[in-house]
Amino acid sequence: MSKLKMPNSLPEPNINENAKIVLQRRYQRKDTTGVVYETPKELFWRVASSIAEEERKYGESVYTPSKLAREFYDLMTSYRFLPNSPTLMNAGTGLGQLAACFVLPVEDSIEGIFDAVKHAAMIHKSGGGTGFSFSRLRAKESVVGSTGGVASGPLSFLKIFNCATEQIKQGGTRRGANMGILRVDHPDIMDFIKAKERDGELNNFNLSIGLTEQFMQAVEKKEDYDLIAPNTHEVVGQLNAREVFNILVNKAWESGDPGIVFLDRINRDNPTPAQGEIESTNPCGEQPLLPYEACNLGSINLGACFAKGKNGHDSEIDWEELRRIIHLSVRFLDNVIDASIYPLDKITETVERNRKIGLGVMGWADLLFQLNIPYNSQTAIDLGERVMKFMRDEARAASKQLAAERGPFPAYAESIFGETNLGPYRNATTTTIAPTGTLSIIAGCSSGVEPLFALSFVRNVMDDDKLLESNPFFEKALREADAYSTKLMEEIAKVGTIRKMDHLPESLRSVFVTAMDIQPIWHLKMQAAFQKYTDNAVSKTVNLPNEATREEIWDIYWKAYEYGCKGVTVYRDGSKMSQVLCTGDDK
Ligand code: ADP
Image (cartoon, rainbow, N blue to C red):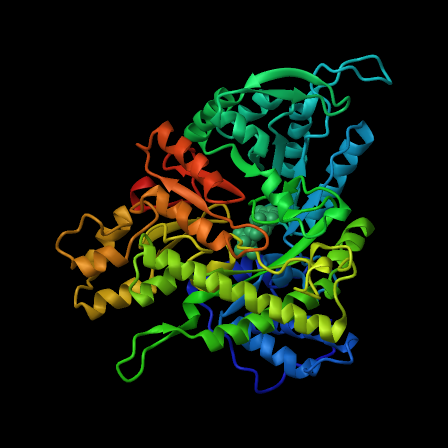
């Protein structure tokens, strides 16, 4: 518990209706009988004060802990910035597991595999998500030296990880999430590509195929490529790259799985190659990490950085305010590292060596609404690049300032920055764009850099709760255009979009677009625009209508490669039995 007393003058936070439910169910502290004993105000103060306390360690700080605690409290309760869920849940409670993202190695031995299962269980229990590469496991039917038997292969073990995850509920509320990656040159790759073809199979995993530069070139040239046994490093077969790519695309068309990640590209941006290769990301793909590395994330609500134009000037982004928020948020996330207690010593060592943080954004679609810029326009893409460049430059400047106060991250000298004149930085990475699935509900904003799923919709959260929502900026614009009526809102809730509502002004219909109104290429362009200035990766789903073709998905996967993305996930409407978000008609 923090020693900082809650000031009497601390204002009550404003909590939206959806956030009330989410906070109560998952974030506010409960006693052993499940009764909530913490108010939202106490929750935010618990987080703000315990993270600010870390400042005491550093004599050089420009802040006193009590001043900083108040700044953090105001930052969170104005919903300008929120740290990832585990920080909100656990900070200042003595649990100390504050990071959302972990990657664990899976060694090619029974001990190694079951160590990973155990460690994943410990991480899930504490609210984190885990990513694994299964590429080091020998292929099915390879010989097991110690017994003379045959190995069962990565896929059979993947099922064990999935099953273990199923049984562990985080804080009694949600199940863990996993990423499973297999390199495209693993001999079992075809089984892995088809692993989720039946609905509900491996439901606690996102799967991605680890593609290499060599493979992508073979696809282009329609050549065969080698399959390599991970245990002997021998070439054990060949496949035609284009055929594999086609099957991959087919499966993604059918169910959205598997996604793809570009491993060489991820490693090209690995800031600490001396510590080994990056072989996996966290569950939603936005955070590549070394084995035994964790990262805490936080997101700035861009929708709250809108400045109304004065004296006839155009409305625009409040850059000064954004700068202030970025600097405070980086300090917050760096302090989170010090406040963390990780489930394994090895994780603590790796995290403390590199001190990665992942500051990102949410509320991007809300900002575009306020600026009257259609998401599917070059203006939006250019602004996305500009905003993210600003984010990265300022986040790095803040990390530099922290390095001056506290010293650079311990592996700085051996990192890629050690050889340049960019650093020294306090953090090996500073930027990541997370999905902000729950954070965006708490902040009442659009999630990550995604367009709105629907202007008005029913949200399924946490098993069976259904929340009805419509976008506040859309509502406001309707009222200003004198077009608002309850009947209209009900109509919109049925379909989510106003694209076909000819009776509404074109100015509204072009700006208030939803994920399904937008051509897939704009989704991808936006992902690439943000990726350009993001140290880690961007969580983004390229949404497609139900009638989208396999060729379109082929094109998206290929363009993701050409545009410099680190991976891509597609989702064709209706291709999975249960969707997290649905418009009224889908119920
Ligand atoms: P939040 O909004 O709750 O902070 P995000 O939706 O931004 O979380 O997800 C960020 C990361 O948090 C994911 O990539 C994953 O690593 C982790 N995560 C998300 N959901 C879960 C879950 N159910 N179990 C475990 N980890 C999760």
